[in-house]
Length: 590
Picture 1 (cartoon, rainbow, N blue to C red):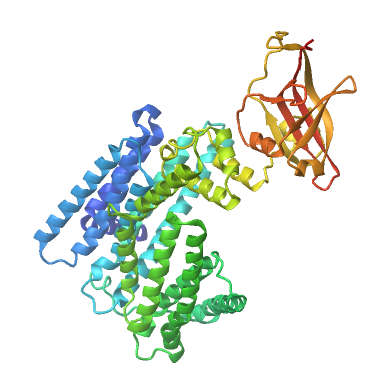
Picture 2 (tube, one colour):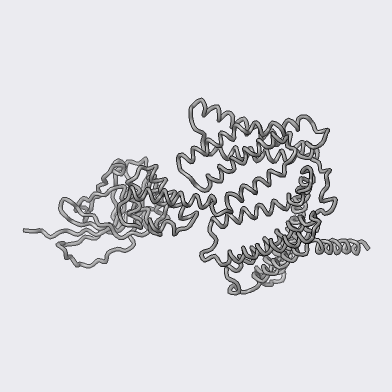
């Protein structure tokens, strides 16, 4: 009897959920079926782009239909509801087709625009159904209920998935059956997507429960805020104010890293205001909580100015980047939130989420957005710098690019390299191909500029050489050794091959502009050639390089360097240098 009763309740709950969210449940079912087809089907059934497009459409369609249904329950004119549903789903379909037909995949600009739109769509689930409310207590309580139901639903799904997966694994251990990984993927889809999604939809409040105006902050949460969270925020305030006094006394600009502390502090303030909101609307709210809600945002305002100066310093030192533009916008939004909380006495809080979504949309969705502004700035800056400081052919080869960087002051070289790296990695590698060869490694170029090039130890590079655990400073191996042919034309009489010859180099010589390298044969010095340490550093940062020709200016003999390996501790008086190459001796003339 009891089992029948529970089964009847679950069936009734599913039936009510199906009547309330039919479109959402349909999207979730289709998404689950599609993922199961991917799991058990063949790889050639769908391309990577088709897989992404279908997943995107079904996932966003689930969220969109949920938002429209929750909002539609507040709309009395059903005609308007049907029109909005049709238009929104049509726009989603058009957007999906647009993403699928993009010729070169999704760029950062398009990705950020969609991220902003999805953020606004997700926040609308919590705010849009309550546009008629006089205060935000019902919205606050609805948000809390959704968070609780989501945590419960996915916890149940996770437990079920873990239990079924363990039971499946037992068949392999107990009966020797071969269990494919597809089974475990199936359990993930069913118990971590389909089941918890339906459980969550079935628990979403409706009617009067959806607009419950009697939400309250529990006594436990208020004690946690008062005795744990507020002291933590107080420590943040104390540290940041002490730091502010320090830099004012020393006459310094704030460190850019201070933005992280101020961001965490302001986020904590918003969290406290949100948690205390229902209590603040009651007549019997404690005076302490009212004072915290009123004056905590005010204490943060001076620190927001500190954050502003830190961002300004980063702009001044390194110029405009996408991250700094968004960080500056976040800083401005923090000003709006703190001033708004103080001016409104925290009577409304829903506007905080709405303003965040609106600002994110304004800076990311429109044709003139932060991504486009940053790309144009970087292209214009690099074009002007290369035109004024480089006169050779474009695009630059790897060795030419390093030579150009070494001709600039170190700060300018690091800035130019970081801008090119950002254009290549963050935006599109084609943006930099007009200036540098695609094979240029910007990280290695940065190491070269800073003069701290390090590679793995000799044991990792070549087990036959220098098996000690000493640090390695420079390594170079040419991509093609010259063939050993006794073809001594062009005025050369003889050739000596050097294979993995080891000599000692003074650390003092390494730090100078010229490094002498003695060529020894049969324990006798044949000649001395001179290398530039800067050239060695440059060659070691390049993944492929032909053998390097070095002409002795004194006698005109030619040495072709094919390999070198410099190792040792910087505190030792000497470094160990292993080299290979070919020495061509000129013919004697009468």
